Length: 140
Image (cartoon, rainbow, N blue to C red; front, side, top):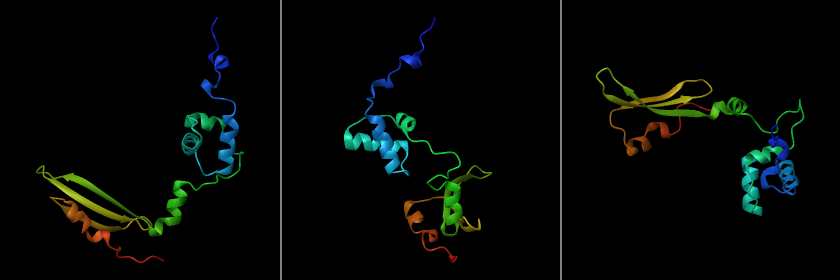
């Protein structure tokens, strides 16, 4: 004979009055997630509640209804013409020397806009880099 912990649990100290607050905050601000709602409840009302508990009491989106926010792939597709990505990486040569490579790529065409290599990178070099100026392509 065991004890069913689920039936014995009582919201771990949470009062019943917080559930309507969570639902109201989520309904009034549909773009806010559970982390932000939990932080707002703590800051504004002094109620400490975990984001997981907030998620439990947030209203569920009906099936078939689109999300209210934009997903990352949609954002990238919509703004690809104005986006550049950069990476600063280290390459080890056959003679075990370190080379530092800066690559800037345009998202829409996946064209490399800038690729420079140096053996001694400094903050001054990175700041005065030609890649920090306007890129050599035009936006539609």
